[in-house]
Image (cartoon, rainbow, N blue to C red):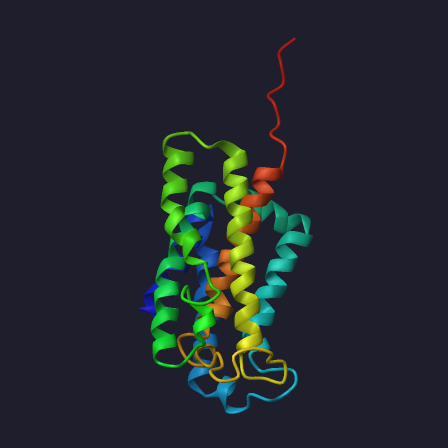
Length: 222
């Protein structure tokens, strides 16, 4: 289920990109490389090293997000993403939450990472198709409504990311010592922090940039 969820996330994100071939190739290579590392035992073999080995899965995507936001070329890329696809992308957060719930039942993640604990990220996924319909089909709600929804979704995303990072077995672990977040150290769940979460972050940041950029009024003749 999570392999299909990751494929859905990558596919919908590529749908948002005007020239999707290069982005699809980069995502495919990254997922294959990350999956190979996870299958080799690289992440779970030594969980108490500094820096944590999981940083190799999180660091490159995070650096990519920073470059997208901080550089003119990156901001130009974000401005070209299709806003309706960026909204529908967040539907993938529903199967992600269901997978996390199953992993919690199998004692691979702590309950606090599910909607039975401190993770309410599923709300964004459940409301994404409604927001898409109201904003892009019915032409209602408007820019400010979509802006508020994206800010709320970003807050919920950062909330679960913080809890997940602090629950991973490492010298930096601060939460869930009775049941750490071990699933992300294994294939295919390493794709969650290494791909799905960064794509969700980019989808929110791109939408916020587009919504906060003043709309240029067409020049009047004469």
